[in-house]
Length: 107
Image (cartoon, rainbow, N blue to C red; front, top):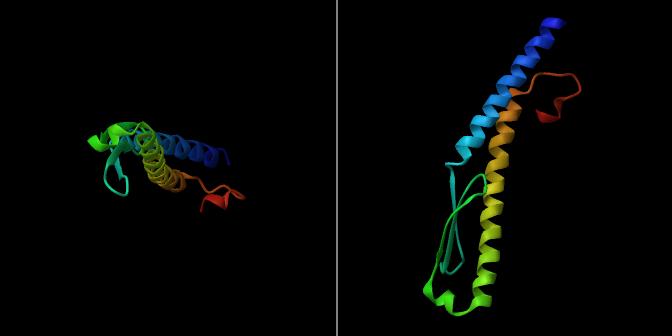
């Protein structure tokens, strides 16, 4: 029993390391999102850090319209990045979970 416990602890530490490595890798995964008409473009990492914003000159003429574009496009980009982030981290966590009776909800 003690050996099983040590094995589980080792596997958990290994999984934790893989999760940290995945988080670092997600800093290099870029998500691009554009408004439907292409006047605004946003690039952010899968860890939801904004890398760039590209605004067409015509949007600079109307502050309220620009704000609306930013909110809509940023929200879409953040949603995509969150989906990628969660899927990647869940895959690593699921792969490294020890087989603990009653904890099969991750399978």
